[in-house]
Image 1 (tube, rainbow, N blue to C red):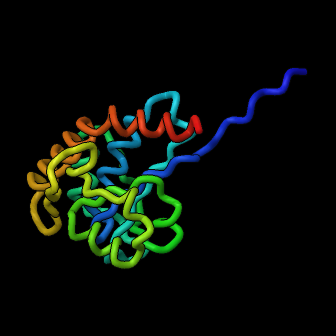
Image 2 (cartoon, helix red, strand yellow):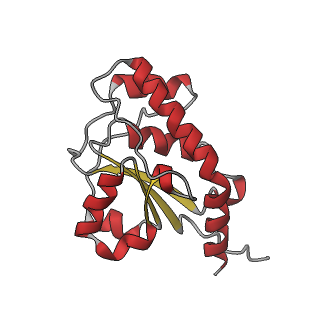
Length: 168
C-alpha cells in the first residue's frame, strides 16, 4: 500500500487585530477565510483578536448582518483578547489601525517584521479602517466594503508570500 505524503496543516497563521474583536477583525477574518486559494486551504489559519477584547463576546448584530449580506458567517465567532501565544505564533499580524500596531509593538517588539496596519500591507497607505462600533448597519457595511477592498488589493502579495514561506 502506497503511503500518502503528509499534508502540512495550518503552518501559516494570519492574525487580524482590532479593539474589541466584535466588529472589524472578525469581519476581516471571515472575508479572508472565504478567499483562501484551494492549494493553501490546509496550510493557512486565520484568527482575530482584540487589544481591549473581553473573552467570549459575540460579534455585534450589525457585524453579523453586514457579513451575512456579503455571504460570510460570524455565527461561531467569540471575541478573544490578544495574548503572548496568539501574537508569537502569528506569521502576519494585520491591525485595523496604526495605533493598534504601535500598542502591540511596545509589548512585543520582536514581532515588528510581521506587524502591519491592514491598509499599509503590500505598500498601501498608512491609514486606518474606521471602527463602526456604535453606528448603524450602513457604517458596518461601508467598513466591510473597505476591508474587502483592502483584502482584494493585498491578496496577490499575501498568497505569494505564504507560498514562498511554506516552500522553505
